[in-house]
Each structure stands twice: as structure tokens, then as C-alpha cells.
Picture 1 (cartoon, helix red, strand yellow):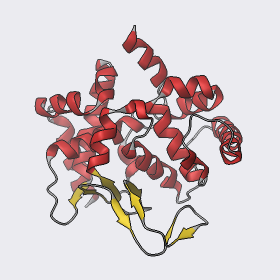
Picture 2 (tube, rainbow, N blue to C red; picture 1 turned 180 degrees about the vertical axis):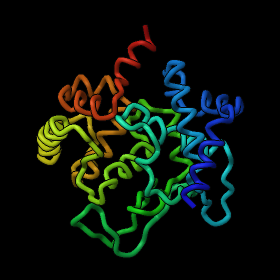
Picture 3 (cartoon, helix red, strand yellow; picture 1 turned 90 degrees about the vertical axis):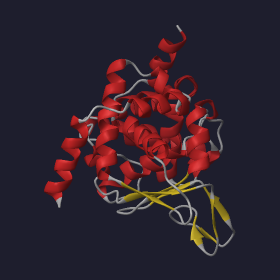
Length: 258
């Protein structure tokens, strides 16, 4: 099985990235135009590998198109393209992506953080499962990809959870090989998380106060969606995210407007 999967990935990467996919990303994903040629080529290769590895499953009665698959895969690939090991082994525990046409209402008792439960109905645009699927609402995926200025991106949020879960723990810490960087990550994020929990003014939305896992996911989508705002409001948090992800989206945004 692993051999066949590896062969599929090698064959997929060897194929040219379809021009139709590139055209749809240019229309559907606002960030695409900000990437330089090297970054686009990296995202394209990772996207092809992702699509060769990960199944896309529709909710009942919903038709999943190539455009949907490519938009999700490209954003998930963008997230990891600058990390120390920019391969999709970081998503090796992902089984599939399940797409719903719109937000899903969860009823009955369910978790709202690691230590809290509620029986109130909750509308979900996405959900990540350890050693399981990522569930996404297409309506939210499509809207947020076009409007990063809102500071939210459900694909980046849920795939940040996948990175957090890589070591089997949900603690708000992605894979960080360098010990010194990991220690700085813990120090900076702990301080920022405590500020959010106290209700101090923050560019991060309130959901970041739910628990450390949600803090990381919200910080990640903020870092990539409105990087200049995060850099100005929380320079230490921005800097440690920049080192962990190996990307400087604020600098990228400034180049775009020069």
C-alpha cells in the first residue's frame, strides 16, 4: 500500500500542473497573486502530491468538483511549504477531507474545547479529527479564500489543528525540531494565550481563548490572512510564527503593494 501510494505521488508530481487549476486559483484564492514564481511552483508540487494522497468525500447529495479539491489542497499545502520538512508527511495521519455544501449544525452533547461540553446546537464551518478526516463547509472555504482581510480561514484553521495533532497531543504546538525555537514558541505563545484569556485587546478573535489548540489555530489563520495587523499588534508572536512556518506573509503583503 505504501509503495503504491508513493508511486502515485511521484507520478502526480511528474505531471504538469493543469493550467485550468492555476486559472481557478487565481480567481478563487486572493493569496495566489501575492506568491512569487518559486512559491507558486512549490505550492503546485505540494498540491499535486496532496491530491494523490488524500481522498475527498462529499456529504450526502453534494458533488465535489476538481475546483473544490484544488482550492482546499493548495491552501493546506501553502501552510507547510516553508517548514523545515515541507512534505505532506506532516499530514500523514490525515485520512480524508469531507466537504459539506454549507455549515453543519451539531446537536446533542459535544465538546467546545478540551474541557468543556455543551448541548446547545452549534454551527460548524470545519472540524479536524486526530487520525481521521478534516470536515469543511464549502461555502465558508470559498468565501474566506477570497476575503483574507476578514482574518479568518477555515482551511488554514483546521489544517493547523492537523499540525498540532502530529505528535498525538492537542497542545497548541506544531512539529518544531529546533529545541531553542520550541522553547521560545512555548514562552511567547503562553504569554499571548494568557493575555487573550484575560480579555486584553488582541488582533486574535475571541475563539483563541477556548484552549491552547484553538489559540494556535486562530493565530495561524490570523498570521496568514492579516499578517501586517498581527505583526503590528503582537510582534513577538508574529516573529515566532514566521520562524516556525518559514514564511513572512507581512513582507509578502508589503511587496504586493509596493
